[in-house]
Length: 478
Image (cartoon, rainbow, N blue to C red; front, top):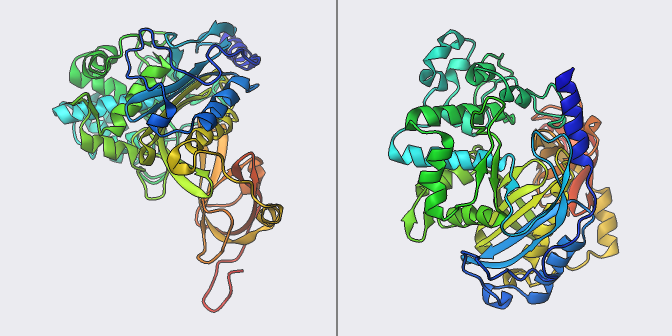
């Protein structure tokens, strides 16, 4: 009962947010005092049109959502940043409190922590202190020898990095839910046993399922193999060489490091991490993370997928052009976007914990920043003619349902559709938001389906879907 009360209180506190006042200039000029960063005062010199970039920062400042910070970095220089005052709460807070955010205030980055742990594993891998990613995990945990059965013994380090262990684990429905599996990591004595003492819901390596417990075990193995706490290893191998001096790593109820969450960083330092990755793991000429590990971490674990070694992939559409990004995502609106083809980093923080809709708002902000670059025409996409909009809402075609995924612990549901060639859809992405989960109830990966979708709030959204008999030779698919 006590835990139920705390969970409800945490959830209520996290949604008790109000529109925040801007704490930065209207066009996001970086503060020059104690910046510890190369500042570009002229957006044009960094490849931006000043007015569209200013419009993006003003949209951030005027948003009714509980946004806290945005930092734009390009070509190694800080180009724009803006901060706001807003309500915020930590994992253990019973109530939200108003915080005036600025360049020096640490922010809880939640699951961005997982992405940092993956970089630490890569550093240790380069030093030879952790085994190859093909190593079965239970080979490294002799205390769990009794669990080497029913297929658990086949789960590899790569499966944990890719979140495809096959272990039954449920983080859906938000982290305020008392029976969310991640919550047990806060108080269980043997976290590795808590994670692995579960039935297999799928074959190891076969299916993505978001599981913070896997990152917790990676953290335990890192501490055991390096002989240091995660905090100390991160300080020596990553943060100190990167020039990150102001940070914190909040522990669990037993004082242990939370590898799956708990880091507190400044948004500027999130951007430093982004720049490190865009430079293939180098910082000021020093190789901090092996380049081959950076490439592996950012690449999807499965072709066409969206998840690498604890790093996400996606894209935005600007003026009919698809622009890919890789990133670290955290509950509540913590985002670190890398846009390699534009050599661009955008870091964002917010306080909308357990509300998955904040992701749509931040993707729109990313689109605006991308659209402000000279390569993308330095402006927003042209409006779609009315007749094209109408056609887009009524398109129906045969497709194969490839996967259903949940992001940020299940707050947002997407389906991935392999569209038949020649469909001539106005949608060129294969990823569609599902607002009503009943739309995909009963459908399985590999099903032939017909669907209808609309462009809603800048995102492709399914509005209808149904199974159809599979295509056969000489029978039209439409």
